[in-house]
Image (cartoon, rainbow, N blue to C red; front, side, top):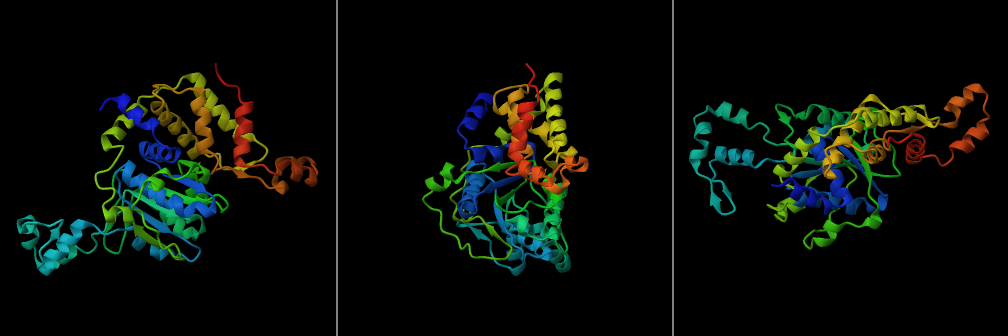
Length: 368
């Protein structure tokens, strides 16, 4: 496929779809936030984006303050068709799918195995889906969130007897309320970017779909739902972006160049953020790596082979909002030199990570 055709597809995507595409190109995870009342609709929209735009499998993980760490493995895995075929073979039943019977010769190797080895082979045939949508993960315990971090970093998860490797591509989307707490520090720092979806922007895929069903959203415990859209076959062979399209964008990302002036501009933004009096932390080395990676991913999406200052500013608004911790008045650095607490409190009132980023982008000189 021509590169121009891929760029034309990008221009037709919504902001939510663009955020998902960026994470697939970078092979990283993201945070999607919205108003609490719109979480249900956004969950359905994300499932449609995953299956109808990118043709990937998905599962939804609902979390709460009652979620236990022991439940993580069992809820993150979904059944695999191959394991079901093998189970049917063991029981002597024919395998039938879509009115087609699979020939028994397909499993001659397994038939020749001793019964004990055949049982061991099928101890746990479940698999990790391409995309895990973790809703309200910030409400779960730190131990539960740590398991999510381990999955993102190692791309594998262990059940009782089996090590399950994540497929390629693999993406974890954290669907959170914009009024809720942050994720634990280390997990939060490992998230590539964050995106706020305004309910007023609508849910185009959900609105266009006439076959989606209302879900039972009353669950208060952690549970994984395999996408109903996949079960019903609505998303079968329906996709806007193929793996070949993603490969083109990935190769173009790797070829992007950054001039010394733009690189200095990027690092000046990092330094100004760290020195901002309202910042208590979050501007880490990992964040800088993600900052550099994101600007490279954005360039091909704008038909560029190089990074411009405007792309750097755009990337800063996506990489740092979920990371920056706003300091408390008591810990603001000028308090060490005799500032009045009331004055510092008034100064920090209404300060948000987004405002801090805007102040820094205004203060840092943009290269010509």
